[in-house]
Length: 264
Image (cartoon, rainbow, N blue to C red; front, top):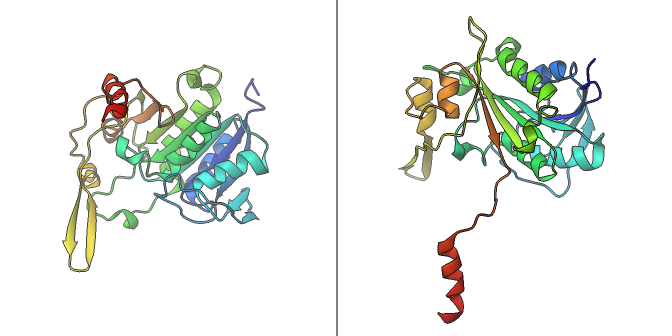
């Protein structure tokens, strides 16, 4: 094998260690380096960067199952289980993680962000599953459906570090379509800023609606060219190079406001 032979990879997800997507990635990444799986014991979708103070761990045929969140898995994998990785991969998620507003919600993406705070390069990988007229839970996803996501992840894992990608990005958010007749292209994107949430009050409950998913089901989106959602709906693999959140920027208006505080 080439220079990536000894690449150490920590693999996690938020769908749970028994999911089809993590098995598909594991088998492909095993051709790229040494893979250690530390993943939630069960589904932890949409938990964001929730963290625990103590979690139970069990050995699993694929690696280690943690009774906790994706962020728990990253911290445990890096600090308590080892070997210390060169790269963290999170996925492959059953369902896309697209748009700026999703980044903080997604357990898949949050695992990559957690790795970024440790200074470890990371790739979050998700599969866009078109629903059409069906509800998301009614869609059956097979291992073959992950083929484009797997191909893209293996390609990036094998090359991104040595090519210097992570000198400018902390992590990559990758979203892939299900396979079509022709291999999907890969394009660099930025997360869409389009946001469309609403809520309805129904007696003793309130129902929250993410209208973006309804638009995507109909391939009817108004996201600009170059955004992640548009790329995936058009059949391409979206790669968004991102940095960990909460960066500090200089703002003249805030300087003035803080400077006037003692005079108020």
